[in-house]
Length: 299
Image (tube, rainbow, N blue to C red; front, top):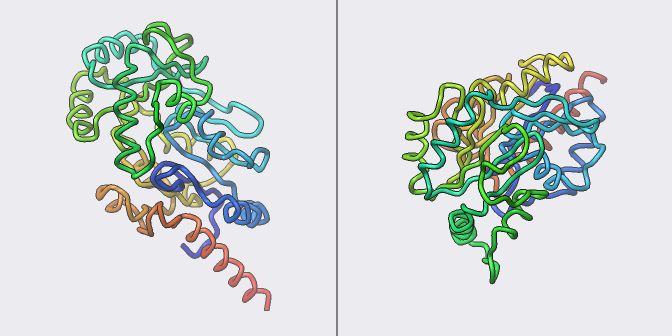
């Protein structure tokens, strides 16, 4: 990309973050300063909760970041909540019925009042997250509990006895499935869930149930309408199925080298992997190019 974008939207897991859920904060801070100087807004676009995204971006409060959380169901900036898109009330009982028939998976409930972890899915959640640590080569805590999981992945989560005890209106159901079963479970969900609910595979056994028609692309569309941006001026990065619509909506969509084959096919460009911090390198190169063009035009 040789032209200046107005908005940069970046997925987190598998794109901006390494497998250890980290990024080079010093490099990003310098990039953010250069983006600010050009009036380019940075959007964190993820299936994660808003609380978790703020945790990832700790130290960058009041730096003008915009958040598209819950795969587009929750939008916020430094001023607070911008928009929320919950499930239709009539679809919620059907979701509960379907999930009750899938006892082998872990699940959570994200609502307008918080994040809730049902204790009756304790073993399933701990099993999946233990496999995550093993498969990514990270050391496994001596004792891995549901509370550990909640504190790391879902800060502020509230433990409840069952999903029916979650307070507020549901906006997303994060499901944790054994990776070998993810695609078959996803196909089953697409058959049995009501039309108003869509399952999105978001990486390493995770499937997010979201309201149909709500995704990262609709989040970007909302931002365009609110702040006067054009889709053609959006630069977006992603790696998973839940990034596909966002990359297609953006004027320039970039897939990481570790992205799913289907995501690479629709992207305008494929770069290095998340482990290589390829997004940071791409943005540095882009800003260097823009600076060089400005210097040429000024001479």
